[in-house]
Amino acid sequence: QKEVEQDPGPLSVPEGAIVSLNCTYSNSAFQYFMWYRQYSRKGPELLMYTYSSGNKEDGRFTAQVDKSSKYISLFIRDSQPSDSATYLCAMTSDYKLSFGAGTTVTVRA
Amino acid sequence: EPEVTQTPSHQVTQMGQEVILRCVPISNHLYFYWYRQILGQKVEFLVSFYNNEISEKSEIFDDQFSVERPDGSNFTLKIRSTKLEDSAMYFCASRQQESPYNEQFFGPGTRLTVL
Image (cartoon, rainbow over all chains, first blue to last red):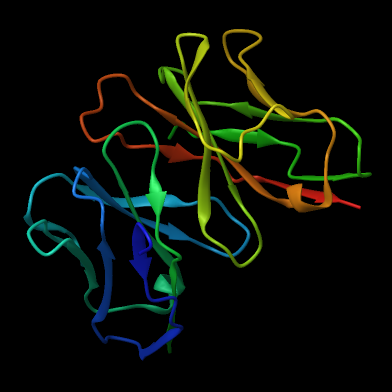
């Protein structure tokens, strides 16, 4: 079983739709959970981070963590064409980040 | 806004040659990392570095790889004898000591092409 699983998509939605992304993980030692956005041939950019189970909201973005199910989600409300990118989940218990494969999202104008 | 910078943006080298990839982390950060991303694959951890020594390294980070903080600002990754399979994007990242969330901020990457 892979340590972090993420459906690579691709996912295509119309402008204004809600984008729903998720990851599952197997390592119960993971304590910190992050979502990164990566544009083509660029470095990952930190979007959100969470520690405990529950929801965290930042503008149009909501991150959810369910440690009991080992499941994390990212929701993007009122999606814009500028949100088109690859979204990577990442998690860690210590020094190193373990990444998902990334989901490529296209928001159609 | 402070950011991690990396040079060069693209490095082309012949198999067997040595390459040095350079990074300037965010100035008040104390933890440094290298990751790589082979085209179409996951971002993979290579090594973490704190207080002038390696904290952790992956199985990818074999004897051909080394890291150094030669001065107060630069952080380098050296590959002694490059192989074709070393072709990838290499990302440097840094973290503040006080961060409770292990927030790592990434540079734009160096694309390494080994011919």
